[in-house]
Image 1 (cartoon, rainbow, N blue to C red):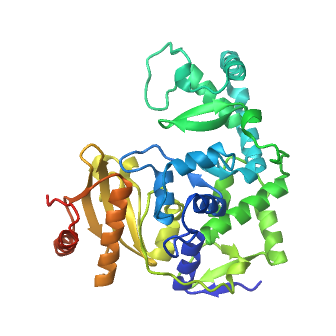
Image 2 (image 1 turned 120 degrees about the vertical axis):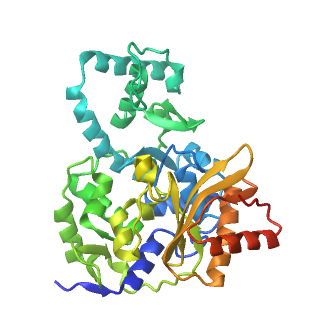
Length: 406
């Protein structure tokens, strides 16, 4: 079988276009652009880390320059997106609802491992939501009988709510102060939404096409990751899609290992990169699969909030900075919202040559990111390149942008 051959530069263009990062406002501006972005990616990961603005809002703001965080809540209230799991929790287009059912069935099958008391607790919680309407975990009395042992050691009613959500008995209506508000699906699902469970073949085809649309070029393990809680017919259906010509195998010069795949529509698609700068979340679609960053971008990245402090190289929450098709830096930052200061604990430049235009692009991205985080000042505490650091501070000063040297 012939493979479509690409250079690494061509592959990067396809990957960035698929991720919505070929240029600023690739999907336009306004609330409709937010929906179009989520519809294109098929999944937008949620994360609770609030060192800077949360990952789901961050990912949108990087691509929709005029983004307002209330738009995501509005799209959910309008029934156009819903919150559930693929490889993690996130937002999914509502018209893909039926493809969440196999994951719910998978979680429900684990009930065999629950005690009778846990099942009874779930029934009580579900009954109360049905009688009283939308409820949050804090609407239930503290029914903990033992001392909490950590972050994920939920009290029984909270655990019951989460299990009911995973099984599909409850849906998330909205989030209030980042806490989930649960309601019955029949109260939230639009009347015209298909709730027919997909066959194993339909589910596998959906996973393949959805994953490749968002990733551009991917290994089989990347494609399958969104369905990691469900046994599926991935390999069989992928072979069929290749035979039909909808998907093709790819060979990228200098990239070795397992077979790569992409949608065949990219064979003749002309893609131009604008060379814009993007400050990305660690949980951005582009950054989730670290091996792809190494293979295609020569960028070795890890979000170090999960790494013990003595072993961190760049900082607790280091954000990759992309210009064009090159990762040029990473910055460990924190938004001090009370003082309205964006603290950059460590601005680490990668070993790549930066032009004056690229530095200007980075400065504009920093200012936009500070504003998005409701900050008026930027403080750079440390950098591995003091010359570039001072140049950035100088340019900020010329612009009369509020700043403060550490």
